[in-house]
Length: 268
Image (cartoon, rainbow, N blue to C red; front, side, top):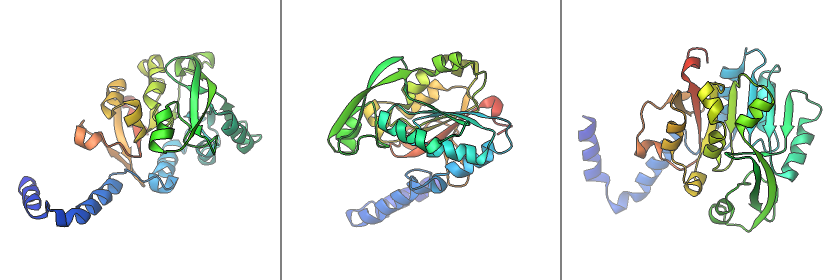
């Protein structure tokens, strides 16, 4: 029945005169699938997800990688006042604003460095006219190609998740959130040891057009996290991704993916 319906639709509507109609359906369908709902944390689903996952947990540990000015970190402690958040922000100007926004809170601990697959030093690129924005990336092409503006650069310190976890003696991380403008897979590679040990119970990361620049496919994340069940975030719930399909998974547009360690699924 479905195949016959698709064939009928193609035979009738696969015409130039229906281009605007088909484009509209495509754009509406993306939003319904949880893609391009970036306007705020309510429509993206982050608020609902954080409330459902964090409420009632005793002193959950959260790593906010790509914390920017700290709005996500503050959302976490607003939902669960017992949470401890390590907020990683490499850009010196943005980090200054993060520290101001955190204030005297002992629950949010700012860390002035990037997180990657190798420790050391790394160039960070940003908009030249607004240095210290949410778009800062280790990929120059993100700024010059996707945002099409002049670029500024600075050098920042880089650590790996494995090093940080070992240095801070973290036996469990309840939530690892990664928003690093295309560098998400590299962040996970730097935590390979912790991933194998099952330290990260839930991982939230962005998958978007920056992954075209970094050449990181959705399939790469699935292979990096074989013991996790993947979901796409919707405004009020999570949609489970049961199987890999290139045409349904390799969609390079804003979306939040939530990977839940299999042992955690019954508790989350």
